[in-house]
Structure formats: C-alpha cells, structure tokens
Length: 248
Image 1 (cartoon, one colour):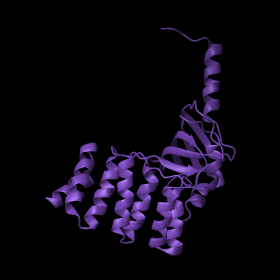
Image 2 (cartoon, helix red, strand yellow; image 1 turned 90 degrees about the vertical axis):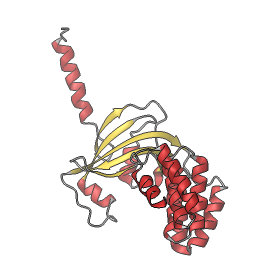
Image 3 (cartoon, rainbow, N blue to C red; image 1 turned 180 degrees about the vertical axis):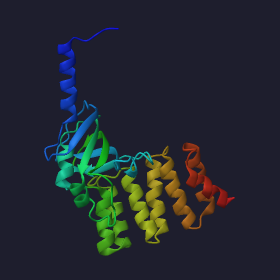
C-alpha cells in the first residue's frame, strides 16, 4: 500500500473541505459534480440544460431527465437567485445547489400548497450549451394565449417560428402543442407536435405527444402509428403501451 505524507494528506483534506463550502454570490451552497470546459454563463446568455429539483429525502419534484428533453432559459428573465447560481456555471459542467427553504418558497410561491421537509431543496443541473439571449418561444405564445386567445397565439407561433426571434427547442414546442390541446384546438396542436417530430424524429416523447393529439382529434390510425413509434424508441413508455391496448 502506498501511503500519503501527512502534509499531502492535510492539503487534500483542506481542499476537499473548501470544495464543500463553495457558495454562489447570493449564498447558496453548491458542489461541482463535473467541471465544465466550455464558455462561462452570464446573464446575457440563454442556457440549455438538463435539471432536476428534489427534496432532501430524494423525492423528485420536477425533472427534465424523466422525458430526456432539455430545457431552455433566458438567464436575464430568471429570478435573481437563479441568475446568481447560473453565474458559476460553465458549459459541460454539472452542479448541485442547496436552495434555502425561504428562497425556495419565494421562487415557488405560485405552487400553492407545496411543503417540503428540511431546510433546503436540491437542484441538480447540467449546462449543455450557452446560447444567444433569445426569449423563450413558449412563454411568448403563452402570453398571447392568455391575453388574446388561441387564434392569435397560433398566428404568433407561426410568425415566431419563421422569424428566428425566439428560441424553440423540443421542450418549448411540446409546451405550445399542449396549450392548443388544452384549448380544444387539436389541429393546431397537431401542427406543433408534427413540427417537433420532424425536428426530433428519434424522440419518444415527441411521437407520444403527437399521438395524443391525433387521438383527441379522432384520427385513430395516426394515433396508433405514433404511439407505436414512441414505444419502439422507448420500450419503457407505459403510456404508449396502454394507449395501444385501447386502440386494438
């Protein structure tokens, strides 16, 4: 066995201890799970991430990993506490933040009734890419949907999609499709989900969402086709399996 010198061991322990005490500019404790080697993120960027929020007992509250679709954020639109956390990130890195419960309650104030154990929530995030600072297309369309209705929202969606003035990734298009579906606009939802399938042909989630829109529009053959494709891409998709049983 190779032994470390006392001085070397002391240095390593001190380094480890300091690493555990890293804090963001606003005081959140965090760990670097994997160092990034890409551009540093600033408030002037957009961020493409995979992330997960959980309580101290490991119960997952929100996770992009569950469907394998990354999320986009325009950093300048985030609460200041999250902007502070993003400021320590580099592309390619993975991080774990402890969000103090008072901050978490303030950030999640719209989620009424949410109560978590302990003094903090855990936010794990991988910064996949640092992107230009475009607004989130789903938020823009949602704002128009709320203020002017689904017809105006659909027109804006089509204009923005062809203008390169907003960010539209798989996650954002999926959200927009469901906005239309929830407003009984099946054909508009099919258009959005079809675009997503064209852009992400190997996404089980994109095919599953398109299948749901076809099902609600009464187009059962197309629903079956896309549920089958979703299950082929992800054999663990229990929803697609259940729907195919119903469509037999």
